[in-house]
Image (cartoon, rainbow, N blue to C red; front, side, top):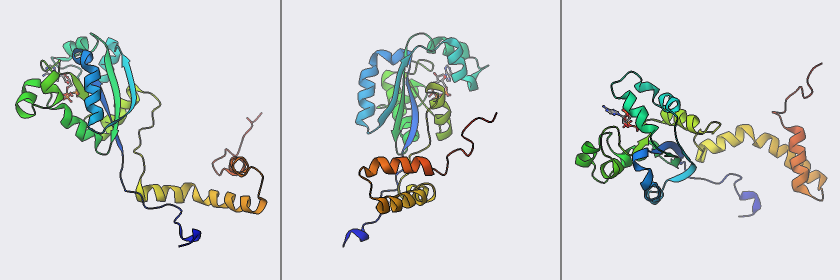
Length: 212
Ligand SMILES: Nc1ncnc2c1ncn2[C@@H]1O[C@H](COP(=O)(O)OP(=O)(O)OP(=O)(O)O)[C@@H](O)[C@H]1O
């Protein structure tokens, strides 16, 4: 096999990394280090991390779907009572796997059904249940943006999706640039290519100067 046989984009496993939001709540904040170690040992990558104290207004916004329920005031008071640790966890199937790891909402039920779960081991009652996990892919997107504004939460492309994306968005212009590079043979090809790409970027705004 010579160089021309090497595929431009070799086969990669079609694994899609998913992200979810985890919160270590005020009642478990003193166990944060050991919970974080356990999270890592289960193969999650922690992509973002933030310790903060939620204001009552922030807690209200975060749990807005429960507004009006009997337990809402005590939930807000609890979430504001001490620091929380907020983590973005990444892994294939992260949403479901983190929900399984935390266990059922009520720690008593968790102790019956899933004694190894975090809520079984660290939770006290239905409000003080130690940890939070997003309940769906779209729930995770919303919550990650809430806690980390500006985050890109799309899954990382792998396999065929990555090849399709590169084929549609990058290859055409890259191949043109590489062709010109081979013709010109500049002293510093990387800088030359970078400048060529900037000049020939098909996404470059057509109107660069503000109109007067
Ligand atoms: N009946 C209740 N009494 C007191 N607190 C409750 C009750 N139901 C829910 N909560 C509190 O509100 C939180 C959000 O409730 P939800 O039904 O979304 O449960 P969950 O999805 O298991 O929990 P979380 O959203 O915190 O991961 C719970 O984690 C718990 O702290």
